[in-house]
Structure formats: C-alpha cells, structure tokens
Length: 217
Image (tube, rainbow, N blue to C red; front, side, top):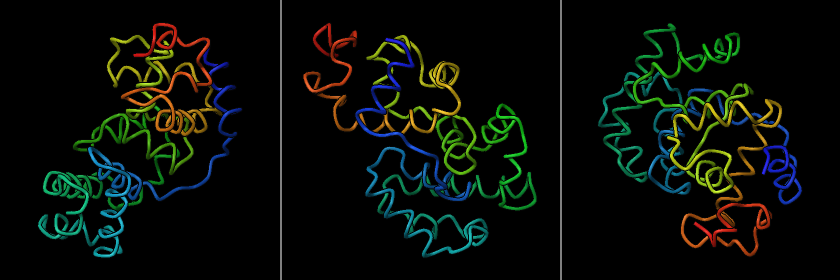
C-alpha cells in the first residue's frame, strides 16, 4: 500500500488536519520529555505542575534539580526527567544566550534538527515534536504508534530502527501532509491498530495491510 493511499484513507476515516500552534518550542520539548514512559494524563499533570512552580523557564533553569523533581513527581521517573530538563535548559542558554528557540525557524530543517539533537537526551522524536508542533517545520516525529502502524502497513521494514524510521517516513510523506499524517497515525494506533489485540476487522486498511492478511501481528 502506497503512502498516498494511506494518507487518503486516514484523512477519510479521521479528518483533514490543518496545522495549529501548540506551545512554544521549549515547552513542547519539556512536555515531550515528560511524556516518555507514562500516560498522557500523567505527563499533562506533571507539565501543569511544573508550569505552576516555574511560570518562566528561566526560573527552572536556575532551580535545584530537587525542586524540578518535586514538581513533576506525578509523571513518573521524576529524578531522571528532572535532571534531563535541567541540563537541557542550561545547555540552551549556554549555546544560544536565551531560552528563545525561534531562531530555528530560520535554519534549514536538517540544521535545526542537528541543533536540537546536540542537546542532552534529545532524540529524533523530541526534535521532531518541537519543530513540527511549535515551528510548523516538516519534521515527522515517529512515536510508538506511528512506528507500530508503519511497520504493520509495510511502510517501513520490520527490522528498521526507530531512528531510521524517522528518515524513511519523512522522506516519503509529502511535507504539507506530515502534520496530518502524524496525528492521524497516532489516533489510528490508539483506536484500532493497538499494540495488543489490534482490531483488524474494523481497520480501514484491512484489505491491503500485510499484517491483517497474515492474521494480525
């Protein structure tokens, strides 16, 4: 099944999505870090608590790790994530002189990605979320849902790593469809193409999905 057909069926089943501004780049980065290995509910609560404790990210950059940890405790892995957030904020200030990442929008996509990837603990998914959701740049974050559904549809080989999947999918999805593709693939993964017991009988890709033809993954 080709990428154009996948996009068309997703759009028909869910909806066509136009880009909308989410959060500023630093906020998007921190929320993505908080979302790792936890639920959206827990990460959202941790993010709100962190913002209440530190209305300005510069305050968090100058705060002890213990205070950041206390604020995000509800999100899980609080110590690890607090240390990462602290290091990232400090490194951004060190390299750019402030916590304003708007300058990334003036760079070529590859350079903007490289700048973010040099931050401690920032991988392709986090960099993609910052660039796509905050700056409307055509970077494609491959989270667990996008990765799983793409493998089952045969868009990427089953042996491909998540890092490599970013490059492959970003190379085949039209830039103006990346935002929509990401959100609709996530929704499809949550609703239908679940990690355990995928609902193949209800899937829009049922007739052309290699995994469905094989009886599900």
